[in-house]
Amino acid sequence: MKYELTPDDRNCADDVLLGDLREVATGLGKRSLTKEEYNSHGRFSAATMQNRFGSWNNALLSSKLSVSKRNGIPQDELLNDLKRVAKELGLSSISVSAYNRNGLFSATTVSKAFGSWAQALSAAGLETSSSWHPRVPDDDLFSNLAMAWEVYGRQPKQSDMHPPASQFSADTYKRRFGSWRKALEAFVEVANHTHLEPPVTRQEFTPREVNAVSQLKHHTPREPSWRLRFLVQRRDRFSCRACGRSPANDVGVVLHLDHILPWSEGGETTLDNLQTLCEQCNIGKSNLPMCETNG
Image (cartoon, rainbow, N blue to C red; front, side, top):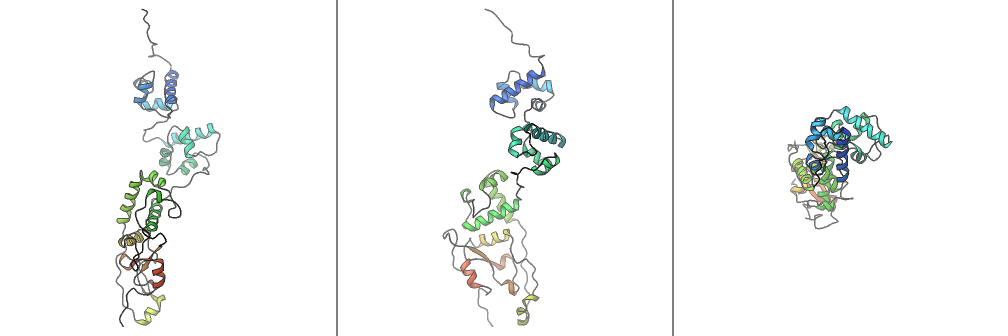
């Protein structure tokens, strides 16, 4: 029987180690590797890589692989990698997907470091990709969700989030908040804890003053915020307080918010002075009070 020793890897060149890292990553179809993955498939060990290059992340970077977990990356290092990718691809701008395929880091890491993907491109002297769109503020997503809730007269489902009821898809919410359920929870948290204008004590006006509506001074804006609108309609069960119709059981119903004491007579935009009416009932009511007054 002939005995043979395996090659002595203790003094092999850096290129051999790095080449094996890249080969394992290619075989697994990954842009980055964990130490566990390399120990299972590599010719050497993760400890060998760490000893040779100082750390596992340094070994990954030296082999042109991505670092999955690294904090406090200097901005210059991020910018240099952006420029490298742009040069290798021969592009004056880089999309998020293109960078994620070719960069050493993630587009999310770069965006967080500079405030947005567009600002990162600008800092690197690159153009903004035509496919890039600015980040939609959370408040716009919440406002859109409130509108969808109103249209359906109930908590919307993922499958409900499409035009014309919704400007954004359910996937947009899942990417932002982690899941559809977490998006709903964040929405309800904001809607329930938003400061509302306190009830306004209405001063007494003479008939002449009431007719001179231009003299009335309001303490609140005429149009309610999406938060106040949502709270009023949720209180009213997304149903018309006059006829009881709701989009939940009648697709053609459109809900409006109505000032109980008309705006033209000094009524304020507050929770206690707003009510939900369907379009037909609101048009019929016009600026009349809901109850007949004496005198």
